Amino acid sequence: LRRPMPDKVKLLVMDFDGVLTDNRVWVNEKGEEMVAANRSDSLGLSLLREKTGMQCLVISKERNPVVEARCKKLNIPVLQAVDDKASALKKAIEERGFTPSQVVYVGNDTNDLPCFPLAGFAAAPADAHPEILRRADLVLTLPGGRGAVRELCDILMSRLQ
Image (cartoon, rainbow, N blue to C red):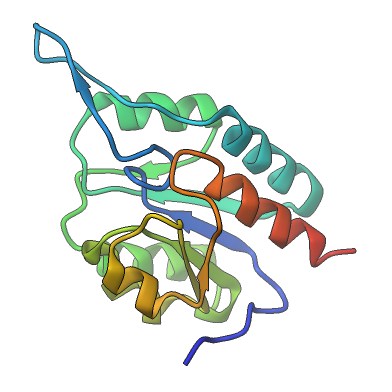
């Protein structure tokens, strides 16, 4: 059963690859990786924080400087090299003094599934893994790294009007 969006969302938690990126990676001859991100997602996150005061957090399994660099540019805290996302999410909620019902989690692949029941609401980009699409409370119309985060930010901001 899909849960309704919580009334008072205070924390938006996102996976990185496949949510803030299009899930592809480019590797150059030196072994350095690059990813593609969407500027409208970036603006959406900035507007969301400005208009609502909502906190954001990225939790990523990825062990790559590109994750930290992108999150630094977005001015969003990041936990990376996280193998147990559920424990990291529980700790992040507790440290901030929030309840699970005040948290929205966005993930795109099966390693995000343990976080879905820990948040008050779970969303997925349109191109997420089929099991994620089945279990998400909201399936966004746009794919990861191509406006899905902006779409969710717009939904969250529209609830304030």
